[in-house]
Length: 421
Image 1 (cartoon, rainbow, N blue to C red):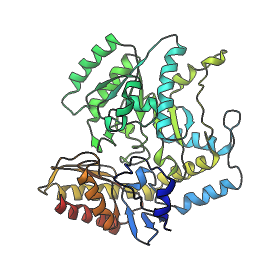
Image 2 (image 1 turned 60 degrees about the vertical axis):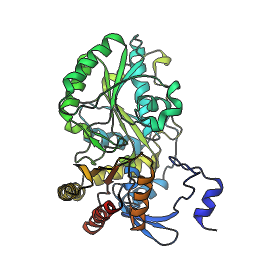
Image 3 (image 1 turned 120 degrees about the vertical axis):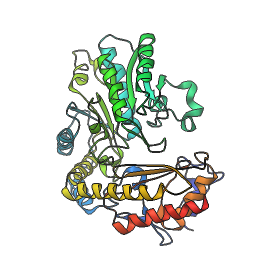
Image 4 (image 1 turned 45 degrees about the vertical axis):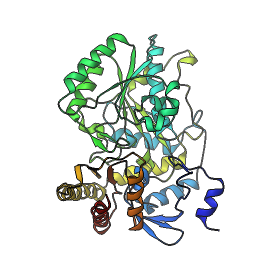
């Protein structure tokens, strides 16, 4: 019996309707940018396995560091203990993060990083004897699947069955370079009428919305508004962090820095799960008290797992190498060249590039998980390229170690796919 057949007996996959899509491709190994299935077929991983394996699969520099750590310390509860990999990671992160960040709190994944950020903001004001119960978020944002993260997300395709159970969230339009004055006026009204604890956003690019790039200057105006009104800001950099946008963090493109930053995915280079919620010293200080209840009672069993920390430290070391930084620039230049070419195609509506992220929108409209999306996905896989369209958006987010030949194959496959649209 094949792996694919055995899978169907007991497993329940995420973001999948098993009634209409019962099959799941069995991958048996991965190396660099290539996935190999149980039949020996190879696929270029052009989305870095949900934006995690940015240094390629099974990168030897990272796996050797992790293997060494596994021989020394595998797991220890982080409530009462500390260890070298966690301390080193905090030092490494603070060096490359926006300068106002000073404290590192460990989580398990992107959703829980956001969940912790939301709870930090709420308890920050609670500890200051202020009751604030409302968040502000951008339309079409996505921040995860736990309840707080769902509440601040704006894509009903994910959250529909749970909307009656979510927190109070006010949504504002995404700044487009022309509308930020209207947004500021809307914010003035919101803060008059509600007790706002925080604003959460994906800096400059909304991932699940279809890799939508938006106006950084407008976002900066909005962030400045919140600063002047003593409202905390939370940057969800789970997707954008660690070089994907062309800088270490998307927040580096914006003058006004967030109070809280959520990190995961490429943090550990896709090797093991881990996430971080970072914050300013001012927020941390609000939790210090002789009263135990003012502490932050939020904990994960695998917080600061030493193996995951070792992977993250290795990934940060690689990120800062001259080779990887040059690779990011090379990929972005190649994307720009492909954009200039593909935008001329009569079936392409728009195209955009930010760092190693490329996306195009087809003129054909379709449901997010509709028949066209399935048709395109099958087309790509049959030609040895793993791309995962979002509705009428085809996007690329390739590992930093992709070769010129592999990247060109991705481009060629996208261009060929337009014939079936």
